[in-house]
Amino acid sequence: MPRVHTGQFGELDYEEESTFLFPRGLPGFEHCRRFVLLNAPSLEPLVHMQSLEIPDLCFLALPVQTIDNTYETETTPEDQQALGGPAMTLDLALLSVASEGHLTANLLAPVVINLANRIAVQAVRSDLKYSHQQPVQLEDGVEETAC
Image 1 (tube, rainbow, N blue to C red):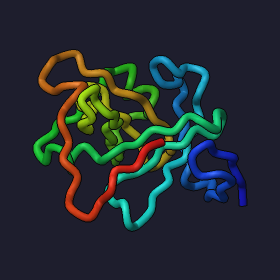
Image 2 (image 1 turned 120 degrees about the vertical axis):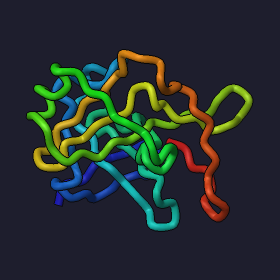
Image 3 (image 1 turned 30 degrees about the horizontal axis):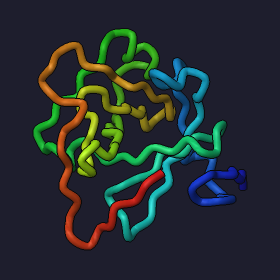
């Protein structure tokens, strides 16, 4: 079983089937291409998106549908080509802590993962239908966690 050193969690074993690849990298992190999703049942539906290349690079994310159940993912033809065509996807909003300490989600540019081939893109929308700082309220019993 592969093992990765992380800044947040120390040494972790992971399943190769849990990894995914950004062929173009992430905007701002173009050199980071391989990630693994880490989850803990006590934190669901929160997931950690851990870089396999940089131990201290980890993003906190939520499925977009848990933030807005009417969310409509938009991908460009380039995104579709990178993803390998239409497929069942997992769409994640990356989370951050706003300056006033509130948790926000980036619904303007979700991470879209093709579940069949584990290829991912950050699908930047061409419209302004959603915000890159959508306020998020965690359910009671789910403590905030950071990467």
